[in-house]
Image 1 (spheres, helix red, strand yellow):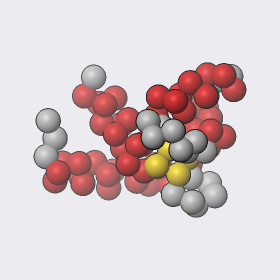
Image 2 (tube, one colour):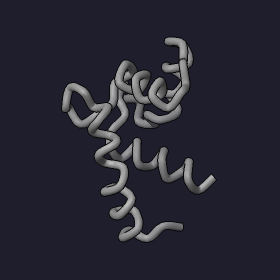
Image 3 (cartoon, one colour):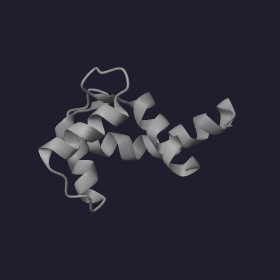
Length: 80
Protein backbone atom coordinates (compact mmCIF):
# COMPACT_ATOMS: atom_id res chain seq x y z
CA UNK A 1 0.00 0.00 0.00
CA UNK A 2 1.37 3.39 -0.98
CA UNK A 3 1.53 6.31 1.37
CA UNK A 4 0.17 9.64 0.21
CA UNK A 5 3.74 10.95 0.06
CA UNK A 6 4.67 8.12 -2.33
CA UNK A 7 1.62 8.85 -4.47
CA UNK A 8 2.60 12.51 -4.65
CA UNK A 9 6.15 11.58 -5.68
CA UNK A 10 4.86 9.28 -8.40
CA UNK A 11 2.49 11.99 -9.64
CA UNK A 12 5.48 14.32 -10.13
CA UNK A 13 7.20 11.54 -12.06
CA UNK A 14 4.25 10.73 -14.34
CA UNK A 15 2.82 14.24 -14.84
CA UNK A 16 5.23 15.25 -17.64
CA UNK A 17 4.41 12.02 -19.47
CA UNK A 18 0.67 12.67 -19.06
CA UNK A 19 0.97 16.26 -20.30
CA UNK A 20 2.98 15.18 -23.34
CA UNK A 21 -0.06 13.26 -24.57
CA UNK A 22 -2.70 15.73 -23.38
CA UNK A 23 -2.26 17.54 -26.68
CA UNK A 24 -5.24 19.87 -26.29
CA UNK A 25 -4.22 20.79 -22.73
CA UNK A 26 -7.63 20.13 -21.18
CA UNK A 27 -6.24 17.98 -18.34
CA UNK A 28 -7.55 14.67 -19.70
CA UNK A 29 -6.59 12.10 -22.31
CA UNK A 30 -9.13 11.54 -25.07
CA UNK A 31 -9.38 8.23 -26.94
CA UNK A 32 -7.24 9.71 -29.73
CA UNK A 33 -4.61 10.97 -27.27
CA UNK A 34 -4.58 7.56 -25.61
CA UNK A 35 -4.03 5.96 -29.02
CA UNK A 36 -0.98 8.19 -29.57
CA UNK A 37 0.39 7.22 -26.16
CA UNK A 38 -0.11 3.51 -26.84
CA UNK A 39 1.45 3.81 -30.32
CA UNK A 40 4.55 5.44 -28.82
CA UNK A 41 4.75 2.49 -26.43
CA UNK A 42 4.76 0.15 -29.43
CA UNK A 43 1.12 -0.87 -29.07
CA UNK A 44 -0.63 -0.49 -32.42
CA UNK A 45 -4.29 -0.68 -31.44
CA UNK A 46 -7.48 -0.67 -33.43
CA UNK A 47 -10.29 1.74 -32.61
CA UNK A 48 -12.07 -1.12 -30.83
CA UNK A 49 -8.98 -1.89 -28.74
CA UNK A 50 -8.54 1.81 -27.89
CA UNK A 51 -12.14 1.86 -26.67
CA UNK A 52 -11.42 -1.18 -24.49
CA UNK A 53 -8.41 0.62 -23.01
CA UNK A 54 -10.61 3.64 -22.36
CA UNK A 55 -13.17 1.54 -20.49
CA UNK A 56 -10.44 0.10 -18.28
CA UNK A 57 -8.65 3.39 -17.62
CA UNK A 58 -11.76 5.57 -17.30
CA UNK A 59 -13.71 4.03 -14.40
CA UNK A 60 -16.00 7.04 -14.00
CA UNK A 61 -17.11 6.70 -17.64
CA UNK A 62 -16.52 10.35 -18.49
CA UNK A 63 -15.08 9.46 -21.90
CA UNK A 64 -11.64 10.82 -21.00
CA UNK A 65 -8.83 9.76 -18.69
CA UNK A 66 -8.15 12.25 -15.90
CA UNK A 67 -4.72 12.69 -14.36
CA UNK A 68 -5.88 10.78 -11.28
CA UNK A 69 -7.20 7.90 -13.40
CA UNK A 70 -3.93 7.85 -15.34
CA UNK A 71 -1.90 7.79 -12.12
CA UNK A 72 -4.09 5.02 -10.69
CA UNK A 73 -3.48 2.96 -13.85
CA UNK A 74 0.28 3.54 -13.69
CA UNK A 75 0.35 2.60 -10.01
CA UNK A 76 -1.61 -0.57 -10.73
CA UNK A 77 0.81 -1.40 -13.55
CA UNK A 78 3.92 -1.05 -11.39
CA UNK A 79 2.37 -2.94 -8.49
CA UNK A 80 1.39 -5.95 -10.65
